[in-house]
Image (cartoon, rainbow, N blue to C red; front, side, top):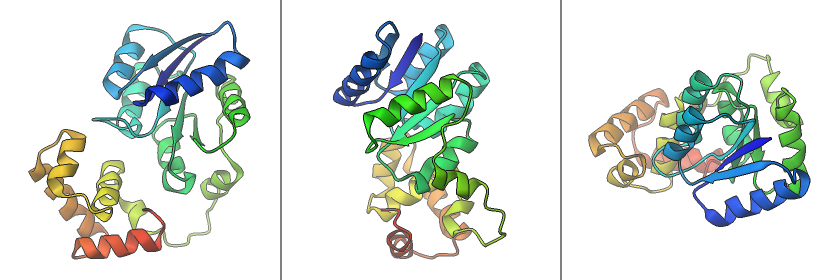
Length: 206
């Protein structure tokens, strides 16, 4: 079995590798530290599973998931994140991930998730399954109207980051981020960053 781990923190990669090594002693486990290296490995080599952090320098897993699906349609991708599943789980599943796992969960749950997605199934917690099956027709929160990149920018604006700081994080110009900000405010029917901050606090997004 060939496992590819993507995370920009070496200590996290080491921890994941140690957990996997105990369960899969004969697996070949390779580490990369950013999305660019992740895509290069996927393009050049074959893997049985990718375990990737959601947030990495330059491009997030949400950015590269469509590319992974195009390059390797049958490759299962398990996303790990520090963010609560209600913020990102459905987004990453819709983008093509096989599962979403919070980093706070026990090591045994990581093994459970890996076994599940390698077998061709999705790893979905009961609460996420409930959200996916919710056809009640209730109005969606305003932030769910945002694209994945708009959602990322909105959270950073609400956390107090400037347009230029966000541009540096995503390797985009301040003008481009300003355009995203304008779209976000329009879609959410808001006028200022203060409105975004209040919204984000109310909805536990920051």
